[in-house]
Length: 95
Figure 1 (tube, rainbow, N blue to C red):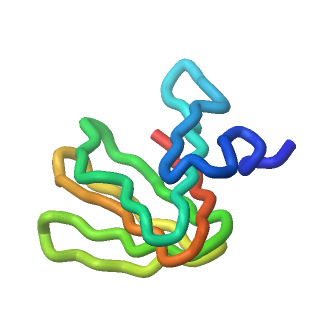
Figure 2: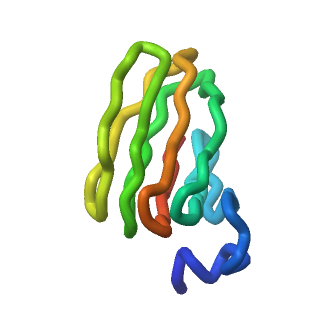
């Protein structure tokens, strides 16, 4: 199975849950080059893993970090954050 096959190839931003557990789930996220995952927050801690591509993660606390293939970031609950793709990117969100 391939993460990118979960999304329409031409959809700018797409999120699809692909594995659910009793205490959490995994979501595949696709963001095409130049597009944004708009500002939002999570109520629980989360982990964002970059599988391919390159994205910029930013939050309301002025934290800014570049994620490339193999990089991840821990996302604190109740902190607004957003993601911009510098390249077509595939991500996995665990929470």
